Length: 486
Image 1 (spheres, helix red, strand yellow):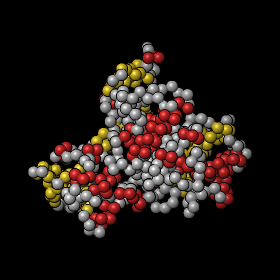
Image 2 (image 1 turned 90 degrees about the horizontal axis):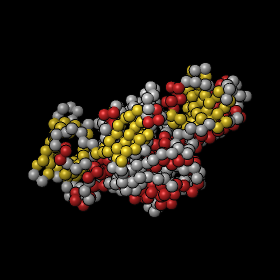
Image 3 (image 1 turned 45 degrees about the vertical axis):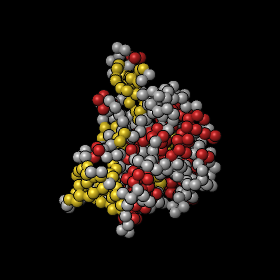
Image 4 (image 1 turned 180 degrees about the horizontal axis):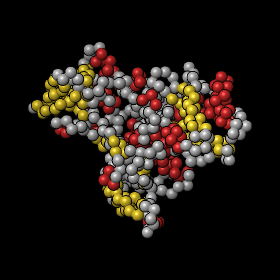
């Protein structure tokens, strides 16, 4: 595996607990990944709530702690709260870094640090020389020599600065090259980009800059309106209000046609949707234009990518869709989009989502029919995997006629719907961007899948008698052939 950010650490921990031998390589000097550098204003967007009425070592607490990695042992769970100074329920960047370092140390994760991945190639499997089944190994060339394995996981983040091909944009600093705030004192600053990184910079510059201009072609979305993580988060909405109330912020829906150096400053030529051009003078320009996935030579080996971020195309289980044996972990797993029901993506781009991708369970557990209904309602009420990865991960119960009722653990919902096979049940939480989340139960019987939507609850608790009666009615027909009815 390559990478020692949260995705790599979580996967390494999970593999170790399953007894899977593996090696972890990292170019960094210590754990943390991108959180060793960013966000530039040193405060996370994801919260960890210290007081919830739930003991921190309990699994249900994960719903309120978006930053800790996951562990089986109580002392290694919810690492973050104890490291936070109490001034905010958003950890600082140093606290986040410390949390990842603490988790790695306490759980014994072993990483070869200072080992740089340089190139990649494919070769016939060393264990199958001369075989005709086409199996192959992946060979990594690193600064410490070659590593060879049938499966390689890349957890390298989406951390390589991206600048769109706008004339002159290459000469301006990127988000990751942001200077100390006092150097922007009393200046007019033009920010290219209106996503979270652009609004983070604008928020930090409000006390310093004379005027701020944020521009990009697409209108700004706000998370408080989308009811998801899509859009600018509420912590960064102050510049939006400033613009709405005609303060010192201007927000433009416009393409950036050219950035021209003009003495000590710049001139930025823009074009609005109606085709009208406007050129603005600025003292500074900052490219808050996002990041791409640092895949090095993987595309040359056939790893297909898509979109501005050059995310690798992936199967529902996060394997390259075009090169078997190459897998991905961490924020890159957002490249496996899932169903996007109601247009809402997974939360795989953030720690609270992709930590569950790394820990997707492989074990099976026998269950009794009488316990199934309350168990599933407990899962949709309190299961953190389902709350953080709505309509993306599901609790799957197999109803084999020969094997009986078995708990298959957490699985990608898309794989359940695509796979076919024995009669089975998948329970998930979904959101439509308009109100509270609600449970959805998918029932596969004789190869056909039916979808059953349960009503939302104002207190977000789906375990009551009305829900039990409704779910029991949904499941009785399919349970009768696997075991006695619930």
